[in-house]
Length: 194
Image (cartoon, rainbow, N blue to C red; front, side, top):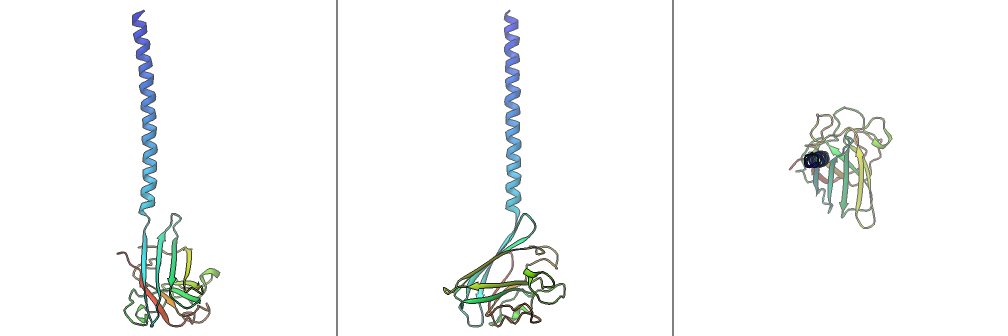
C-alpha cells in the first residue's frame, strides 16, 4: 500500500514537473519572439537633419527620415520663421550647404536622368522631388509622407545619404525644367549619419 502511494506521488510530481517545465519553456519562447520583434524595430534606421537658413532667411527647421517596416522611408519636415504660403522641398545631389545661397548643394538628386515632375501624380520625377509644404500665418509649416524607392544606405539610385535637403522661397510648379521654378534656396541641411 505504501509503495503504491509513493509511486502515485512520484507520478503526480513527474506530471507537475513536466507541466511546469513546459509552461516555462513556452514563456521563454514567447520572450524570445518579443525580443526579436523589439530588436527588429530598434534596428530600423533614422536620420535627423537640422536645416541652416540661407539667402538671408530666418528659417529654422528639421527634417527626419525614418525607415519603415514596409521598406518605405518616412520624411517629416518641420519649418519655422518663414513667409506664409507654399514652399518647395527637394533633395539635392550634393551634401554641401556651405554656400550662403545654398547653391553648393547642386541641382536636384536625379540618378535616373529623368525630367522634373510631381511625385504625387506619378509619371517622371526626380528621386529628389518631394513637393510643396504650406506655411501658415504663424510662419510654421510641416509635411509628412512615406516614400517608396528611397533607402538609408542602399545603392546609389536609392540612398538618400550624403545629399542635401533644400527648402525654396516659393512653390514648385511641377512643370518648369529642370527644377520647378521654386525660387531662391532659403534652407539647407545635409543628410548624414552622425
